[in-house]
Length: 386
Image (cartoon, rainbow, N blue to C red; front, side, top):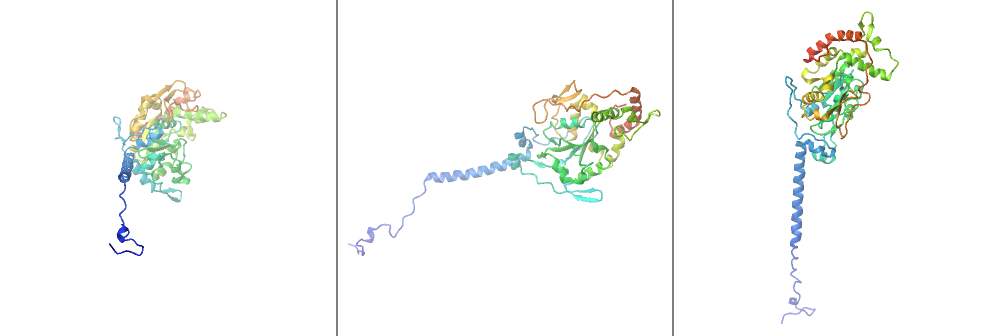
């Protein structure tokens, strides 16, 4: 019927030999899985993108892993009656302070850039944060109650503070701002970095040095009746050196004439008005807060309310955080930072003072009275020491 090939078979006998057939279509299941995988990738991308925005707006979410309760947004500044505190954009001021040139003696030291802050996503998973120069410093005074104030403030979830006193602006300034910043704890966006070194208040170079770091730094001074403060200072020294002379012999340069020895540091620190003058040449009064050491004992929540307002923090630390320890004679925390147990300051706090003759106390109060009154005028607050 048709022409035969040499193999004896007709071309019609080999279908598909010259016309290859198309491959079979993929099963519908494979197409559905591919579509599902694409949708999953898009959903995951959108989730991570929205997470980044949420972490930036609500720093408190980043603290869930450590048990902290940071505020979800920076609260508006609340001020106590008859008292106003300027708001300070902490991060903005820090950025301005990073590029400042710090002068130490005849040398100029350019502050290196701080390490970039981690992205919100990385902070969410690692909780690392970044180290910042302090935006607020407790600068004094020794034996005024600075340790108590710092411990109380550390209860606040938006405050991160160095435990030990860095002594950077009085003893270690030559080490540079990079060294100083490395001492600071890591913070997340919206948290405040703090430190306390009481000797700054009486260090002549400290005001200019802190101003060179950042003119927006907020300063807190805890002050106490200078007579009581001097006795407390002496008591601390006596516990370390039991062989030192009596308080009375160190107080007077000439006992019979009633001449006070102002070269003794325990007396000299209490001249608050004198020490405040250089600070006011570098910082406006509104950038400084003066905390009463006496009220920090009698009404800790009241003083902490003023401090939180001054720092622009939400009023989280209240009466419910304190109880009064009759043995030590000052308030303690019901729950310390990172702990569910009550916490009082160490055994070095609340020492019994030695008995001082009434005549010596009277002469000391007469000596300090004009300095106290000038200090009241400079700060606009009467501390009631007279």
